[in-house]
Image (cartoon, rainbow, N blue to C red; front, side, top):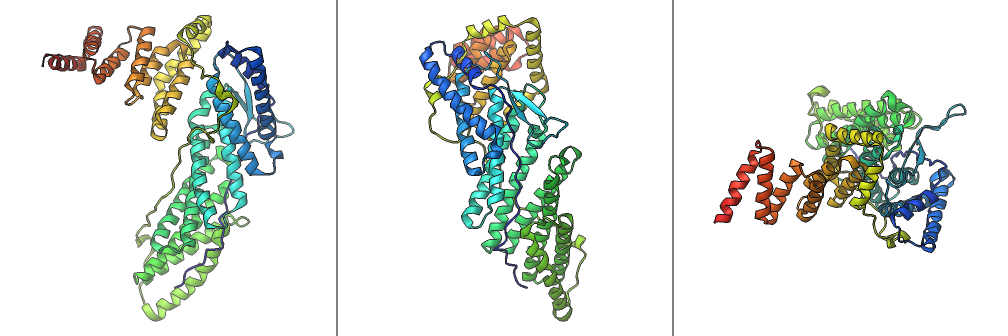
Length: 521
């Protein structure tokens, strides 16, 4: 039985569209934010920053509003990456609560019509940042789908890039909905972003399989890679075939379903080679028959866009099956079992989501010269005092919803698995700025995620207790931090205060006994 030469075949890869920005005022509102955050800036310096903001607005107009006019996708990705880094730096320099910037983005999948406008969502600078990250992922996915993978280096780079794109989309998924002023458009819903991330990972696995076949790896491992390709595409096709996804992915849903069947056929073919080596000729014929069924089903599902890298398998499997049956009838006379009696193939996934580092370049922008904005407690209290009763009630309700629903904890758990302490710190800083009415809770909760950063934890706990000295949980955590830092007297004092406020805290009794015993000895 001979191998199939897959060296010249190229997989059919899928991209997704970009979001188009609305015609919003950009530079002047951001200049006002800079002026409010840095009162020491002179008019001359502010004028210089206005020039820089106008340059950013030019990039926004060309590469975010009218990206469809840019023919070179690599240029588009490079420009968007630089724009993203500049926005991230700028965002650290301003107070997002000082001025409400409204930036609008259309739904990437909704082209609208003559009688109906495209759906859109607006948000602040944070929202713009994550929409740009979405567009970078979209532009790169389109670039990969159009350029192809002619050589080993292209396959290697493509595999890594798809895993990075999954990381970009996961970052957008974890953050973008938090900064929308309106209901998120369908393209940035959690389930949509999760589906796109899964698509990128499935295509990365596909490239690994192509490389393994091209390098002539052993049939057993190739079969496992192909099985995982089939299963990943099958899971994805079930999602894309839902009614709320069909209109977004009319072409992709069919191609992914065809790939799901096709790669299972590829897996059965390579498992047939394993059976031939083990002299299990009957099982080999059974699996080859199943491979033919899978590949024919893929061709029926997608006759016009049948994945190019599967077509050679379909043609060769039919020829091999005829010769294998003849050989078995004349030479081996092995019993051909039913497919249900054959051992189920196990998959092997080698790709994973690569976390986004937070920026694309280490080069400094003109905004790096400004110090990062750090809101003083006096200003925060002034802002809180300026809020109306209705605004206070709304913010209090939002904070309580975060606490009740566990949304904050869920987000932090996700980011904690994928990102660094710095990302966690930034997340809680954002919560602190937005939830003025519940700052003490936000501060106290942030200490749990400081890990071994006890000094930073202590600073947050002191601020939390300054805002609400009767906050028992914060005092208990501060006692635990004091204990870890070796400050026994302060730890004892806090433990005793907690016990007086809440006699049910039995862990305080144990801690007090242990600390008093250690001081005596």
